[in-house]
Image (cartoon, rainbow over all chains, first blue to last red; front, top):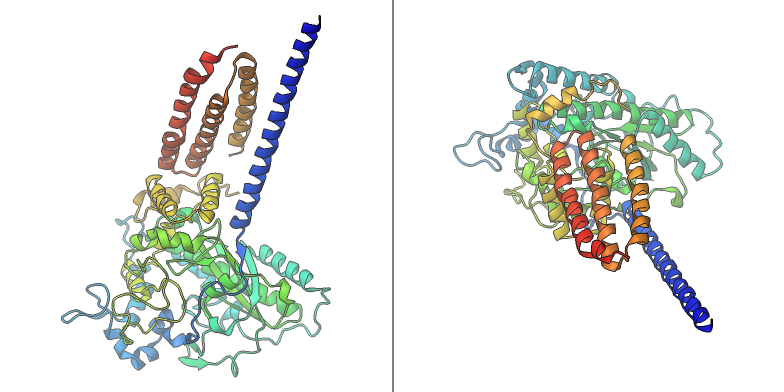
Length: 475
Length: 90
């Protein structure tokens, strides 16, 4: 009897120990998973930075808009003023002009680019009348709402500088949080996919500005209607299937639609603020560097290809911004964030390998100035902006390919491993890329290729794109 | 995609049920538990990844998902069953 009791007690004790072990194990597992989860979430949402996350040299100079490539290419007067620029880039090979080679003329190039739709070829996949018709239709909105904003022309249409309609009385917001919430909700209503607000930073603004339609230099002090205090930055996304056709014309079409969305969103936000009693001017490629402001507003990081990479969207975004005299409390402004993107770029180089113009840097690390062939010749590297630690690309080669291609490429966007549609498994990989490093990033890039992503010049992608809307349900 | 999450939910519930059955009829050591959890995780990712890839129109990614996650799941399941579960019947 006693033996039986002792045996029973032993069994109960054994069960208790098992239960205790199981509970302790479960608790440890749940704690570890929760800890890891919150740390990964912290990394994925971006680690807030105290200052601007890119090293800027004390000798950094603001960009003269006359040295911005598209402004120069679109300006007859600047072409005549700087004939050496049209004698520096080889039309026959890549990079600086060598003896016996024909030079590339930027003004002729932009004409070729702008009239490419008239040379549509129905036997060439991705360059047919159908593709160009879509591209022209996508530009149509911008051409009406803010003509030539993509070329950096300021004071156009919805991006106009006129402040005569600013409401006499300011709306009585309670505090900065209420203002912030109203602005961000308005951005959502305009169709933006992300919005951030930062202080105006003169370093990112062109100085002087240039209007190529009037061949006129403009200054912030004398011509711009007010002293901006804040800049609201909005992102609009481009269609994944269309961008996958890059460098063929459907990719240009979705980029063009991005510009049209910019004119609606930037113009809408400026109008909204003016109705609330604040001065505001919308902007696209004019007034200043959109990528720099988007970084400052915590929307993403500057990538190897010179574009902004936004979490979950990659570089498949267009940026609009609104300059306003509205000022928030310091704490209300968005802060730049580290998403681990630039670290990934250092190990990836997929965009540089895919670039048909060989315009993107293959350097291992970002540098303070250009390193490409001809970088030390001011007549060749006239568009460069030293003094900022980043990957300095040769945008002239990029533009030359646009002109030959008859559309604005997008190969660096399509090939980027961060450019993925919104499916859970891509978010999983994005999350792992934010906290892994070095060889893992290289492996992820190789896996991206093996899994069939990021192809360019893919004729099947054009076929797929033109079927992608067939269901009629885009939700 | 909604159907995929529903089926994965069903699979998870079914797997838990199967695990309870195994616990009752076999003496599972840590190797067996590790094998079961790993095989299930690989199988779960295989279905989720491949379904997602086919849904987004990337069949190469779907096929690679089956190869990279589905095959290890099957190998792990068979090995764990033969080496650590079957010999440990209570």
